[in-house]
Amino acid sequence: MSFINDRFMIGNDVGVQLYLDVAKSQPVIDYHCHLNAKDIYENKPFKDITELWLAGDHYKWRAMRANGIPENKITGTASAEEKFQAWAETVESCFGNPLYHWTHLELHQYFAFEGTLNSKNWREVMNHCNKLLQQDDFKPRALITRSNVEVICTTDSPLDSLEYHRLLQDSDFTTRVLPTFRPDEIFEPQPEVFAAFISKLSQFAGNKISTIDDFNQAIAQRIDWFHEAGCRISDHGPLEIGYQPADERTVAAIFLKKQRGEKLNAEEQAQFDSAMFLMLAGQYKQRGWAMQIHFGAIRNNNTAMRNALGINMGFDSINDQNHLARHLNGLLDAMSQQNALPKTIIYNLNARDNDVVASAIANFQSGESGIKSPIQFGSGWWFNDTRRGMENQLNTLADQGLLMNFIGMLTDSRSFVSYPRHDYFRRIVCNLVGSWVEKGEIPNDPEILTRMIKNICHDNAEAYFGF
Image (tube, rainbow, N blue to C red; front, side):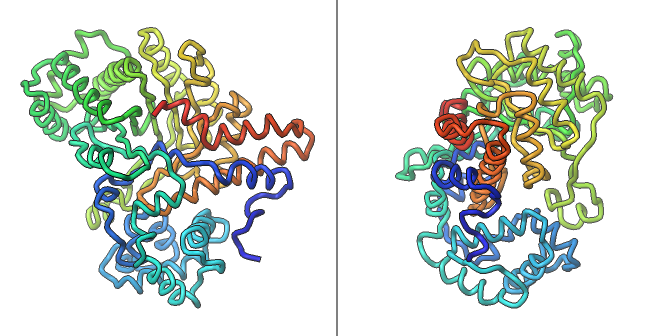
C-alpha cells in the first residue's frame, strides 16, 4: 500500500468516511498566502523541482541546517542536483516532523509518486519530477487549478499598484486572485522607513501629508483602491498585541514627531500603534472587510546570518508576551466601543496562549452582522501547522467557542504546491471528529457531521469573507 492512502493520518472508520465522502472533494479558499500575483499572471514554467520545491521555503531550509547541510547547498550557489540531494538526505531525518508528511503528500498529489523520497532514490525522483515539470499541467495556473482552488488572497503592501491582480481579473483564469491589505509600514518603528512610506503615500494621494488627518485620509484612499480590486481582507503581523489608549491631540503630536524622523519612546510607539489599529479597524468595518492579526513571531534572530543572507531566511522563532489577556481584551473593547470592530481573525504563534486568545474572542461575539462567529480564533500557522499544533487549536476552539463555525485552514505559503496542507488539515479534522464519535462523546449523526466538516473545509470561509 502507498504511504499516502485514504487512511493516512486518520485512525478511525468514521473519520475515514468523513474524509472520503465530504472533506476530500471540497474546493480550497486560500484566504492567506504569500504567492505573487505577477508569478501567477506570467505563468512561467519551473526550471526544475529544486526551483519549485526549495527556493524560498524556509521550513525546509531550517531542517537542512539542522541536518548539517552547508549553507551553499541551501540558499547558496550549489547546483540544483546538489540541493535536491541534500534535501532528500534530510527527509530521512524528518520522521515526526510535518515536513515528512507534506513532502510525500506533494509528491503523491502532483507527481503521482507513491514511494518515499530518500538518499538512495533522490536522482530517480528528481528525474521523474523534472520530466513532468516540462508539461503545461505544471505551470503555476495549472497547479492552482489542479488543486481545486477557488480563491487566493495574496499579501500586499498598501503602495502596491495591484496591476497583476487586475490583469488576472481580465484573463481567462477561473481562480480568483485577490489582494490583501498588509500595512506593516504604518507600524514601522524605524523613522527613516516610515518617512519613506509617507513620501510614497503622498505621491499616491496627490497631496502632501502634513497632519494625522491627511495621513488617515490617504490611507482610506488606498483601502478604497484595494476594495475596487476585490480585496476583502487585511492582515497585520505585530510582534505583540498591545493596547495603550491616547487622546486625539496626543496621537496627532506623536504623528508629527514620527513624521519629522524622530524616534518614538516605547509608550509613544504603543499609543501610536493602538491609534492606528483603531483607525484601520474602523475603515475595514465600513467596507465589510475581515481583519487578520498574526502575532507572536520574533524575526531574523541570527544577526550573522541576517548580515550574510538578508531577512526572511528562516531564522525566526516564537515570541512570548506578558499581559496578553489585558492588551487583547483592551484592543477589542476599544474597537467595539467606537463601533469599529470588524470581522476579526486572531492568530497566536505561541500555543501557550491558545486559551487566553480563545476566551478573549468569546467576549466580543455578536450576531448583529448576520455572520456566525465574526471574531475567529485563527488556525494553527507557521510553527503550529503541525498535527499537534492543529489539534491543540481545534480542541481549544471547541472548548471555548463553536468549532462548527470555524473558517478553516490556510497555506501561509509561497509555494504553488503547498495546497496539500489543506488536505493534511482536513484529515486531522476528520480524525478528531471521528474519534469523538467512536468514543461516544458526540452522536454519529451523518447530517450534522457532514455539515460540520463541509463548513470547516469550505462553506464557512465562503460565507465569512463574502468574496
